[in-house]
Length: 388
Ligand SMILES: NC(=O)C1=CN([C@@H]2O[C@H](COP(=O)(O)OP(=O)(O)OC[C@H]3O[C@@H](n4cnc5c(N)ncnc54)[C@H](O)[C@@H]3O)[C@@H](O)[C@H]2O)C=CC1
Ligand SMILES: O=C(O)CCC(=O)C(=O)O
Image 1 (cartoon, protein in one colour):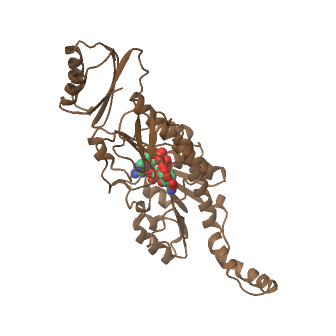
Image 2: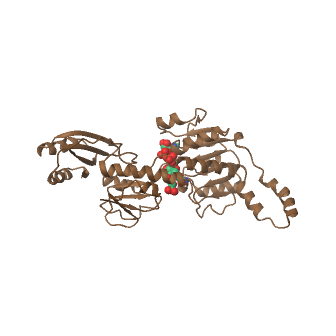
Image 3: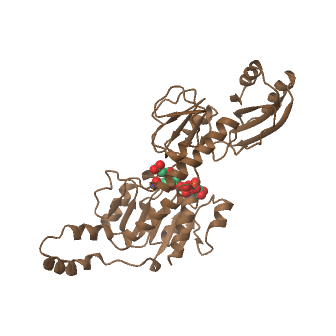
């Protein structure tokens, strides 16, 4: 029986992928094998030693202590692309909100007082303040061309905008998905200096923290717009407020209502709604539950943010060993020597590495005695051993 601890509400369609006869899933249980999480902050909690896998039902993993888990040989999984359409739709909504001053105009209209005749007069006088612009007259810069960024760039291009993209690590898969009409910016500064609107779709990490800063905002065209549906800290909020006050920025549309920005009249701050559609919640939960299940039952690794992809079909009449280890020389040699010394035959083997970590799946004919597993665990550099 596998025990899975949930730290957030996870869509029931995903949880149904973990059959009750083999899985106990609850928001409170002891010695869990795995954790399922959305945005809960795992940096501040003790993660029990029993945990061998963490699944994020979403994209961003900045709420998870990934390096700490890597050092324990614990893979962290996410659900790449599973909520991208939902985020794209809200970002495009945000662009329209900014271009047509929708929130300010709505606020004006709902606060009008008087008879309908008086309201008619006020409407015709007041609407001058909310004159907007149309998207095809503007240039959008998309920073980060991953699952969300590519969808946003393509949709904006279809809406008639001129679109520039910047992502020095774009994958071949995403490059194929990107519309040929999206032009490449050479640097962040190049992108800011050629755009009216900029939207960020990068993970929060040291390199991206605060990289929408005062110097870059100065490069943007006047009355520009910044959209941030990634993470609050990617944007220097003080610089944004200064730019809004000076008129350099016309609007800041974001998913993070911090005290620094939420009351500003030119800010529309939503309560982290990017992935909050029934479809996205289901997609994410199903993808991450399937990934976690295959890892727990077969040791296979897909969609991990810290471990290499490692998928090996199972050999009949064998015991599967899953071994997480440091990516240093002679690990596979030592592991296979320990198995040979115990007269165990390797039927199949897969070894993959990623950065400082490596992962080995071995199908061994017959049973593997507990003593052999202990020997494998004692090899210097081995982080985790399971027999499945
Ligand atoms: N508001 C919400 O509810 C949601 C927010 N997000 C946020 O959006 C981020 C992006 O999501 P996805 O597109 O699904 O992730 P992704 O991993 O598919 O794409 C991220 C892209 O950013 C690029 N990148 C990394 N560093 C960069 C840099 N310094 N400059 C330019 N590009 C850089 C990567 O090469 C990658 O292509 C997530 O990490 C998360 O923080 C994602 C989903 C929902
Ligand atoms: O689970 C959520 O609602 C947050 C989604 C998100 O921020 C992400 O996937 O990175």
